[in-house]
Length: 125
Image 1 (cartoon, helix red, strand yellow):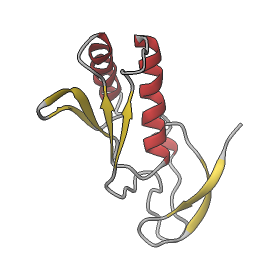
Image 2 (tube, one colour):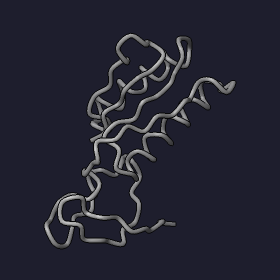
Image 3 (cartoon, helix red, strand yellow):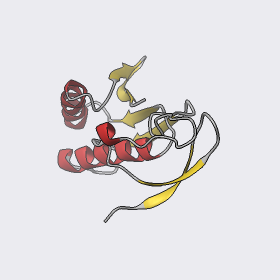
C-alpha cells in the first residue's frame, strides 16, 4: 500500500501529491511537473539526527533503526543523517552496512564525525 503526501518542489515551489518511495527506490524518482527537478533529490541542507544505540538496542534492532532513519531522511528534505552509534558492536555493524549501502549507491558518502567516533554522518543527497 503506497502512502501519499504533498511535497513542495524546492526549486519552483509547486506542490505535488506524491507517493512516498522507499529509500532504495531512487531510480524511480518522481519529477516536478513544472520545472522537471527531481523531487526527492532536493534538500534544505538540514541534518536528521537519530540515536540508534543508547536505548538497549540489539545490533539487529539498531540496523532496523538505521534503515528507518535513512528512509525518514529521504522522505524529508535532509541532506544528511547523523547516526549516534556508540563505540561497540552496533558501531561496527552500522559502518559495515553503510559500506555495503554505499557500494549499492544508496548512500553517497559516510564518515565518522570529527572528534566523536560514536557518531556517523551519512550523506543521502
